[in-house]
Image 1 (cartoon, rainbow, N blue to C red):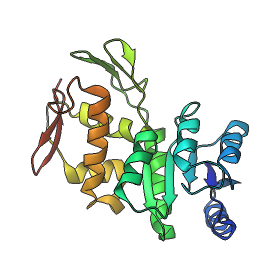
Image 2 (image 1 turned 30 degrees about the vertical axis):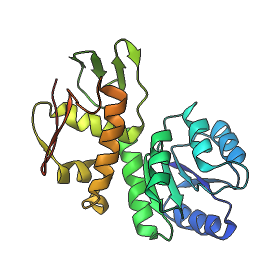
Image 3 (image 1 turned 90 degrees about the vertical axis):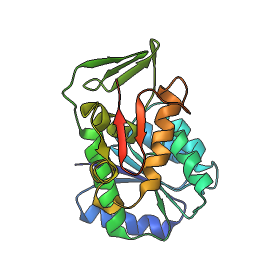
Length: 224
């Protein structure tokens, strides 16, 4: 049974999500504060987190940072903040997806399933050397100049797909479908944000990438 931690200080929303998730077979844990969320993640085996940013004690981005210190489970932000700056900050801190309130329950469930599916994927390829990068897909480990680089589960899914198809163009539609699922086929902004994050983490000069190459109007390619 997949365990979900839902963090929101709106008790009515919390109750509704508990009902919907439980009806779909999830084990549900809840918290109404940031500190409570961190404590719940320590006390229970959690597979995915659904997190509001506007908590009474801590900002949600602080909670993401605290969770990322001890876990790599997917974190889906569920927030009324629609500003792109809030989305980028949450993703930079380690969130894997961002859903804006008000939201559709079916969409949230689809994103949750996709996040859990991505996190459970076990690649088969061995280590790959690409300049100063060493990428081990099976171990979900990447080093840059010998130093380990932390990637979120979504960043891993994107890198995994590109590396498995190294040298070949991977179209935007394929990336969106395989990384985010069918509900995200038109959300090309997701790709731009995550590719920028990957380049900051992996490229020597993110403005002039050597490995994560953009093919204008078509998609991306990993060049070893």
